[in-house]
Amino acid sequence: MKTYLVGGAVRDKLLNYPYHERDWVVVGAHPKDLIEQNYQQVGKDFPVFLHPTTKEEYALARTERKSGAGYHGFICDFSPDITLEEDLSRRDLTINAMAESDKGDIIDPYGGTKDLHNRVLRHVSPAFSEDPLRILRVARFAARYAHLGFVVADETQELMREMSDNGELSTIAAERIWVELTKALNEKSPATFFTTLLDCGALRALFPLWPAALNTQVLTSLNHAADLNLDIDIRFAITCSELNTKQCQTLCKQLRASNSATWLAERCAANIPLPSLNTAEDWLTLLENFDYVRRPQLLTAFITAATQLTPEEERLNKLQNAATALQEIQAANLISQGFKGPALGQALRAERLKKLTELACYK
Ligand SMILES: Nc1ccn([C@@H]2O[C@H](COP(=O)(O)OP(=O)(O)OP(=O)(O)O)[C@@H](O)[C@H]2O)c(=O)n1
Image (cartoon, rainbow, N blue to C red; front, side, top):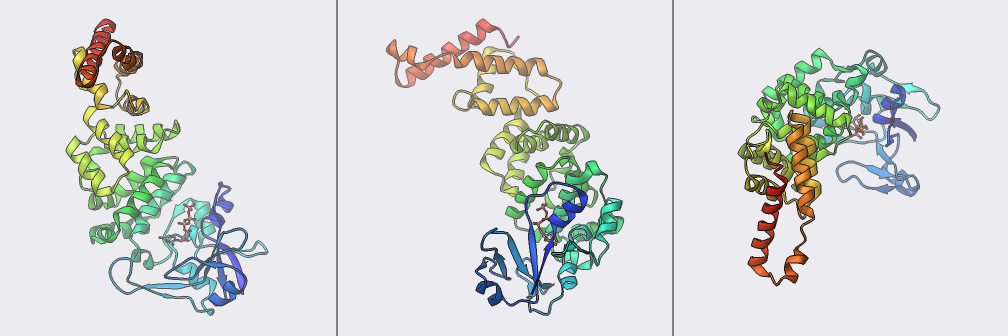
């Protein structure tokens, strides 16, 4: 039995890039060999084990062949005579299809080191197309390593286009897309994720509403938000800012977006660019829409997203100042004056309008 480090850790070590996870492949073993050594089996469809102390993942070397549509149509073989090279050949990109032995030797049958050196994301074999999620993975790696100069190989780009045109993306479960999307939004150049998917037609195939909303300004703002380390919900909301409310709702539903991401995206779609706000009533309605009393951080998130997208710093600052001023109005004072129930709500609102009028911040 022999064990090799594989996948992302080998790639990132060679690239001198930080990595957080190590995956291992075991060659020449039966499941029982690992169980006897106190590894804990976790894989249902194929044998993946957790190391008894490090809890890192150890998978038996395996081959996979597609036998039908969707994710269940795979024939998987993990007998002890599957070689390391066979296991590496089923992987997505050449830079992900390298292994390191316990002596530190690199096993690289598909030219991964050369592609790393030349900054190319290239598929290992036509079997790439057996898993359409890999299109999103390629786009995500492009987003991660764009600043290092990585580009998608022409032939991989072509294959991704064919797969997108053939409707293969429709077999991916929405939950898996959302996972890839949130990882991609977290990368250093998230805009490259979208441009890669736009270039091969995958984004249009998956989400027909989205491409038209991703103009240069939106993509620039998105990368800027990543530079500023703004959170995922803000980054996602920026990508939705050119959609109308209905389109945004449809997209969030289709993506199974989280509640918090949907909430902010819908409000950004509805309020960017800022609507005309001419009266204290207009300002208060907008603030109420953002639930500013109970959740002031969401208004701040909106303002942060909007600042990336609109040259309206002054009005956005006023909005933030107005919200802060309104925080000072306490229900307790009105309660002590005898207000309760709906009358209390009305009195609070009247106080807020009075304050906004005094501030005249809407002018
Ligand atoms: N759809 C997939 C998913 C994974 N892999 C292979 O499994 C390895 C581990 O996958 P994963 O942990 O998802 O990705 P990493 O490459 O380790 O990248 P990350 O840094 O994002 O964890 C990959 O390197 C790749 O060899 C693949 O070929 N096809």
